[in-house]
Length: 317
Image (cartoon, rainbow, N blue to C red):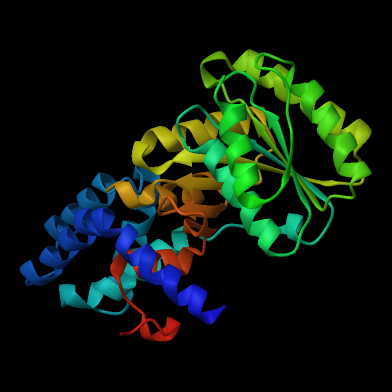
């Protein structure tokens, strides 16, 4: 387990290279380039945080706290602000709950997200992770809106070695969830993961579809714990935050899966999501392999972003 954690930390450090180049390189030049702490110093820090997609609200809170600490501790040297800034970012990412309750009881995981964010791939990877934990997993191909979604999920089900319940393209998603619940009960599955459509451009349809699915789950499978996860594409930055807000309006969202962080300089969006929505990022994707979907830890994420504390994780060469 320690080896897996060490290996993923290295992949995370590597996967966040573009974001680190975007944010941290700018910080370092400010910390070394300023001889005193003044308004220009704070304004430049603020600009880098906002450009790194950390978000205006989170950025304002981070800068305000930094100003308070500098004043209270009578700090004069800009370089001494770096650790305070790192700690301030971590503080902004604190959320009320990050439990993975679905790992410890009979559960249904409803996965929603717009086309192209890596939703179906994330469902497949999550199924593989839970199967590796010794759980009996069933997938429901309830994204019948996108023709290729069922075929793609079938490939992932095969790769992960789990059962798949599906239907024809265009079929009623709620009916597929109904059949999948029956299969989950008959086969005594630990976790049923439902891949659903997420059409935010028509929120009324999405809301109605989700309501039908929720009703079926409440009526047919009340003993199962229900988790709703939204998949967001990290490369879209502030658009991902806007999507998360919209999905939170139509569903009881328990967590976020943030994908494609290895291909973007906008990784700071993870900070904005947890800070502004108080919804935990539960998994992040930093690559194409099944193991590249990993549980999210805010402190480890910020350490990897700044490439610090590797010794604490045993990741030194």
